[in-house]
Image 1 (cartoon, one colour):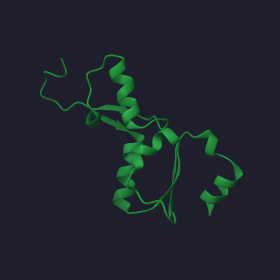
Image 2 (cartoon, rainbow, N blue to C red):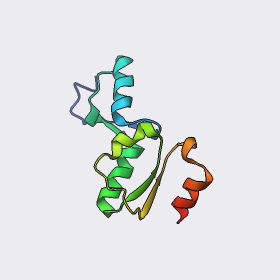
Image 3 (cartoon, rainbow, N blue to C red):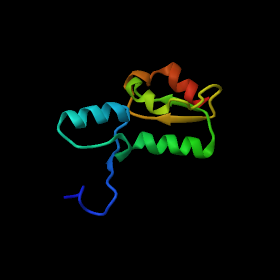
Length: 99
């Protein structure tokens, strides 16, 4: 019904554990008729903000989420993006983030 209605459709999630592409593959595998540009995640919002503010983040996100930040400069970071990434939450990385 939504596809035939005169509305824009978006699938919204707050997940930070996987890239949009991985999420798309999982949802289409479950039978959803969905396009990548219809998915909006918290990572999408973070990327948009990084681009708007023109900052270079330290990405404390799961490795599977990194493709959503392709093309974003991360040298000499002046911002931090935090997602669900327990493997990155250790003293060395947290010290780096605070600095």
